Image 1 (tube, helix red, strand yellow):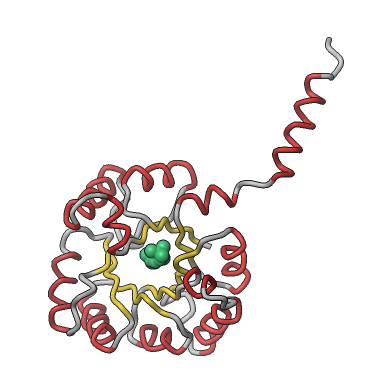
Image 2: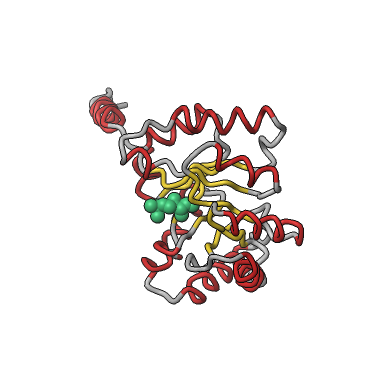
Length: 228
Ligand code: E4P
């Protein structure tokens, strides 16, 4: 399973790459806002770091960048997507799962600009992006579970549909807005290709009270072992 970092903060991206070996990055307008930088600066800084690290290529380290969410027609979406894609070979254009968005993703994929269809909340919404060759779909987990919905069947349904029709592994399923280690486990068990989450979620994955307790026990044993 691939782990993407859901952040536009360069210091977090660098830390998560060097510490956990994250496989890519996803951003959205909220993450850009939280970076404290203007949109173009935030994404150009990420693109420059990718070059410095020698990670160029969408197959090596994809970075999803969302186009202006106000755009509601295909022509404008495609225009902005082309401008953003021209900045880095690593950029995957994030487009909302609405009718003009599907049409835009279809055009962009034909041009070789890779797309991530986002804001997916039902298995049915995940089918057309796959039929039209999007690289990624982003079904949201955290938002639904905060609303009291258990997402295990929803992810499994998308995985099963993709397996039924040969999309599995071609259009990769990014479980997005993942908030907890339990949700990461659920996505992995269901067979999702990727999870994207904030840094704290990956840090939480490596925490367990018994690990700390066990370290204490082993430290005691180490300290009380017979000395030569
Ligand atoms: C996913 O690709 C999105 O960037 C993200 O998961 C949206 O959720 P959030 O902003 O609530 O984390």
